[in-house]
Structure formats: structure tokens, C-alpha cells
Image 1 (cartoon, rainbow, N blue to C red):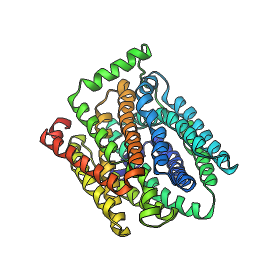
Image 2 (image 1 turned 135 degrees about the horizontal axis):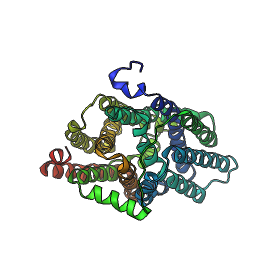
Image 3 (image 1 turned 90 degrees about the horizontal axis):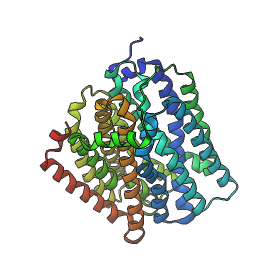
Length: 403
């Protein structure tokens, strides 16, 4: 195999390179659509509550359907399933573009399209994550593959929102949605070109397969502790995504470009965190880093909430993006590195269902509360809640339990 730097070692595997390139294209499109949709919602309605509802229905299916999807995934050919799901995601984006271009878009169609996206992502996210183990021939390279996969997401998050802000200043939201629809062709092409080894599949009824995965997760104190951390961080911290259009327009008196810079700052922090995680060879060193970053996240939230200075707010967003990504990606690395191959789809599905499901619940609550209390108090209170959890987790010895 060709020589790659240690931080990029998973790219020496051909199948992972194909995935990496295709997913880079589709993820950039995803972020462009996410920013464009948030701006469209707030431009049309001026409603923080609708921002929360839209985010909730896009993420909540992962909590409700994700664990069942994981059991289904473990019983089937992952590559074939992923090709079909990616094609459907492209159709969803193109349909959203068509509705917007024809001026048929409004609160009800937006919520309906967000719900469809959520159902598809409930299968797509754990499916992609669990397939990664088949894309590297050396299991020791799996943590690096997971970190690089997250780096791809965060790099797109860094580039995509500012790019979306520029595009929205020149073209319509509909074109942004159409570009996302076409971007899925990149990953579909990469999947078709892969040569994968046969992977073991779970056998038995869907109910039994699901029960086996649930028993494994609940029976491991380490997994339970990590999952609780995912719940708390995403419930309390990830709701900033819902509130960013409010801060961009009302606090900073800006436009879509301002929103793009705020989102891009969080993306920069996420990118830096994945660069750090890509150099970790041992998952055993991660729990202490996870808890420390959760604490930093809790401190950054009230700073952002109470600041009217844009440079300081951009710095707080960078810390916030860094901390949330360390928690989510670090947990994913630990879980996938320890899970048996036949259980990986279910473990990943439980993780993603909690991550995105409680992200949805937190976003919904934040949007509803911000509509009556204002965005800054809600975000500051969320940071205080997270700090209380971090103090409790440190007292209970989280780093020892999760390590």
C-alpha cells in the first residue's frame, strides 16, 4: 500500500478513499442545504418556534427509528442499502428545490420535507457509520477512519455555511437545494466502484436482533455512561443550531452572510477537534478529553449568549463546535472500536439515535422557549445545565467508568 501520513493512515485503503471523496461532495451539499433551509424558514416566517419544530422533525426520527434501523442494517448488505438511501436523499433535496422554485413552499411543506429527511437519515447515518469498518482492511485503522469521516463532516461544516451565505446573497434557496440533490451522485458513484469483502450478518427475527443489541448496550456500564454523556451534550448544547438565525438577524443585525460566518466558526472548531482525534491511536485516552470538552462547551454557551461583540461570539462558536465534536466523535470511536462486527450496526444506531434524537428535542425546546423568553437567556441556561451535569459526572468518576 502507498504511504500516507499517520494522521491520514486510513486513506491508504482504496475503498475508504472512494468513500471519502464521494462523501466529501455530498456532505458539502448537505451543509449548504441546511443553512439555506434555516434562512428560508426565518425569512418567510420570522418564527424561532418554527426553526425549532423544523429541526426537531428532521432529527427526531433518528431517536424513534434509529435503533430498529440498526437491527435491520445488521441483517442486510450495507453497501446496497446505502446506495438506495443516498439516491432517495437526492430525490428529497430535488423535490424541495422544485417546491421552492415554484413558490409552493410554506410552513407545512417545509415541516413535511424535514420529516422525510429525518426518516431517511435515521437509516443513512448508522448505515454509513457501520459500513466504515468494511472499508479499512486493518482494524487498527478504524479509529482513524472514524476521525477522518468526522473531519470530512466538520470541514464541510466550516466551508459550507459561509459558501451558502454567499450563494444566498446571489441566488435563491431553491438552487442551494438543487445543488445538494446533485451532490449525492458523488457517494453513489464511489459505492458502485468499491470492492468489498463479505461481512458477517446478524441472523434471526428483527425483534430478536434488536433485543440482542439492546441487551449488549444496557449490560455494559461503560456504554451506558458514554450514552448519557451524548444525551446531555446534545440536549443542552446542540440547540445553538436552532437559535443561530435569531442571533444573526436580531442580535448582530446581519443577514445570511452573518449566519454563514457564525456557523462556519463552529465548523472551524469541529475541524480542529477532528484533527486532534485523528492522531489518537488508543481510545482509552479519550474519556477524560470528552468530559473536559463538555465542560468547555458549558462555559462557551453563556459567553456567546451574552456577547454582542461579533469577534468574541465567533471565538465562542469555535469553542462550542470543538467541544461538541470531541464528545460525539470521541464517543463514536470508543463504541465502534469495542463493538463486535455483528453488533456494530445496532450499537452505532443507538448512539446516533441518542445523538440526533436529543439534538432534536433540545432544538425544539430551545425554539419554543426562545419565542417567549428570547434566544440569549435560553442558550445561557442550557450552558448552566450542561455544567451541572459535568460536575456530577466528574464526581461519579466518568473518565474511569468510560475508559
